[in-house]
Length: 335
Image 1 (cartoon, one colour):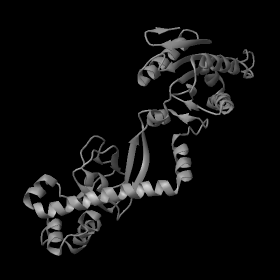
Image 2: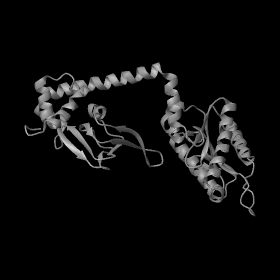
Image 3: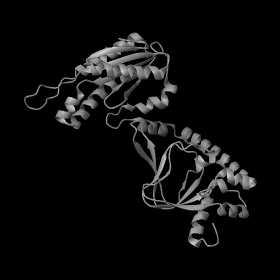
Image 4: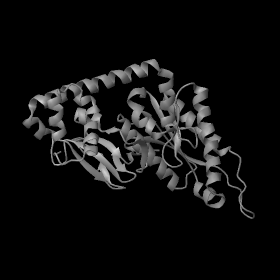
């Protein structure tokens, strides 16, 4: 920043000092920070940073709209937050020297203030003014620690609210079943020997959807979801899940192989008992059948990840070869 910089822009640049990172700097130190601060314009659709990049700058949004996108389990991007003028972007990641796990892009042409200015790095700034840099580092440590403590306190004070929020995050809106992300994030906490995994894929489902439309498919998936939830409700344990596309199933803790096999047979017969669906005139009714693959951790595979992927592959193989069958996955041997 130089003496030619318009007063309006100076005020915008000064706004970055609102960050906790600069809370205890002396006036002359703040002036030095401002001299090492710059501005940038991000055009509509432009990317500020992407997942995997190291956090090296702090951003203050002067005007425009910036959104945060995070990759979902299907490979697409979900919008999880937006920044409006006056917001500081990336201060937490910058403070801890972290790696970004989200994509930040402009929804419209946007102007931002950047510290350190583009072309500079925090390493350069530290070599130049180690005393100021050490204060910023100390503030960043306090900021991270304070936010962690605050988050823990918030969770402790709002346990029921947090649990409900967690349920909503992991719940599949179409069926009310838990999404696969629940397993991905929670398996280390809930894994309990023995743990049964039973996966189901409805047979010939494409015929139903192609003939009667996606609404008919949604109704069918809802009926399957009722069956899965009923099983876990009757057991008073376990989780009913939707994995990928129309693959669903149950995860049951404290479940022996004999009980898991019985549950798989029960699920198989329950799906077959769903009332047939009337198709178009002149066509036969659609009768429900399912392909099922099941396994028990750690008996069938000591690695949970290997067991999960192996059971899923067996499910797909069973379905592709005609379905209407129950198969058990064992590492090195499937039946």
